[in-house]
Image (tube, rainbow, N blue to C red; front, side, top):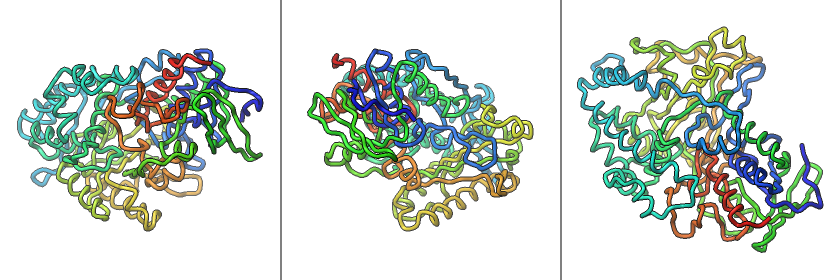
Length: 522
């Protein structure tokens, strides 16, 4: 644990050593600024960490966040990060039952194979052609919008001109995404696969008038200018370790085990009070960058907090002795689980699950998606496990709002987990439980986290993985030039709750650093 120098005034103090805080620290330190990072936990990384959650088992899982799409290559290049990504060869597999027989939709493995999979499921080429047209449209938007994320915020009209496609603008920015999904596609399962990108960590209906589902969808399809979701080699911790190394190499001081408890500022200088096991200290600084939620920012500055946030997901990590066999024998499990494996995510099922959860009930058919990280990156497994064919599984359940867990978090989590795995088992030729590995104490290698667990473990408000509802990537009233500004001139929000935040992107960290450097002082 490195301690801050008691008498030193820093150019910037960064509260929180998650990936965005580390990005900001590296940029500012490389620009010659003196930087102190205060991290509450005994390690950096926030939600982007690799850990061994199962005692006595040599498997490093991306315990919370687990895929990378929104991290600009610009940041990787600028900071010289020693970090690698691998592209998944399969995009998704969705099991289904048609005419009493098990089947499914495999997207990936080449255009011909994907076309044949659509035809086999739906009986014609119509849905595949619609799929191509729809994602050609989102691809055009991605190539035009993604580069703007690391530039000063455009106005809404400037972004509209950048998009340069009125049909795409209407579909993504003005009408509920359900309208576009229903206009383009007729098959219920295909509609559901498309809609899921609008619901990751977002509790909404396809036709929600707030369009929060559209904002979620937009961020999920613009990453890297392609919308592809990549796998970090070595797990998410490999990224945050590389960022911490880059920040330290440039001269930043990273103090773990230091919890910031108060920010006092007059707009030009500030003091950040921090607490350790040994007592309190104070760091003087010109700028404060808060890599935490807007609620935490308000608590630190004594301001009025924003409306409460609510997460809406069940996160499950598993280690298997082998991948389970599928009822659909036309697909190899190694391909089916290599991409996103959709469960109970037909369009009608998603709508029903949302309605049930909104009324305070657990969904009868909980929707979820599953991914096997170790198929793309076997380095996360110890040599012995890899040789024996072990695999990891990550499950992300949708429409599980925090409110459902309030009465009894442990009991509701267990009930929802049981129902979610039962939906998976319905498409397997053998129970998942028969495939689970066991830890050193003989317990199944499975851990589940509700939104309330994420709030407790990581400080995510309401367990919301985005800190609050995602914002449009353009200026709105009060957003400032970079989307990181607060009412205090020298206090910036560089976490996921900033404009253009959410996901593992580093964008708010980059933009907060740019705002400090533009200020031109110290």
